[in-house]
Image 1 (cartoon, one colour):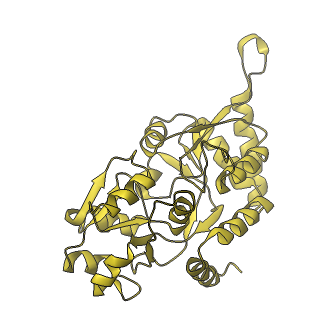
Image 2: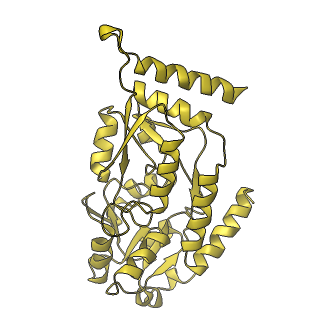
Image 3: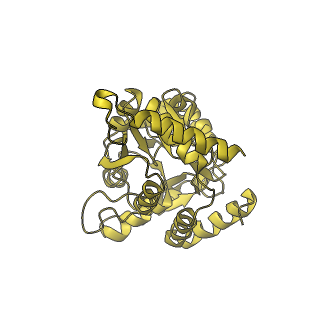
Length: 290
């Protein structure tokens, strides 16, 4: 019954947006601009694999499930995505983690479309060998950064979950080296290689994809964090406004666990390095999503 109500509400919202009063003619369906980050292997914005990323495929399926809207897809940096969302443009994305800060200007779907491994502490093997604090899993980031001289390099405005974000922005802010939000992962990893900082945060999947496509990137170690040990839900989100509300109502009315979502989960797991794949399966079991 709830899904029937949401479907009816979505249809009403979309219909109101479609109606054009001038000349009694119907306007074009509302346009939804889907923002994608340059974030392999989730989104591929250029090259021979353009639009073949994991989330690129899911986005196409989702757009097909929302025929009451017109859809366009465009690249956006983290900073531009945030700006367009806050300006209440008719934009949506698959790439924005749900945080209280973002909920102030964005709507998030009622159900996640998937789950991803939590962020990992990333460093080089020689750094682990020299620091006993890195040799016991999981690593407490709070204890590590307050009891050693190690520094953490992060991109501005990137988010890893409420608890971890608050820790990094308050208690541990002095141990963090911040970079422009337009700094891409390859540059960040190379800065770490050159000793600009000792550690960074990221996802094993993105770093392994980078290493596979850039042989100059040296092997790294992925360390689980005590402060981030559960799967992260990922949601469709839209800027607040008439279009965003209509899209969100329509997304909420879609059946759960679609074929596209199952495919996304299967392909995501297959791309993980073996140790991370094992961790992922254990966390999925803990989630109760068998």
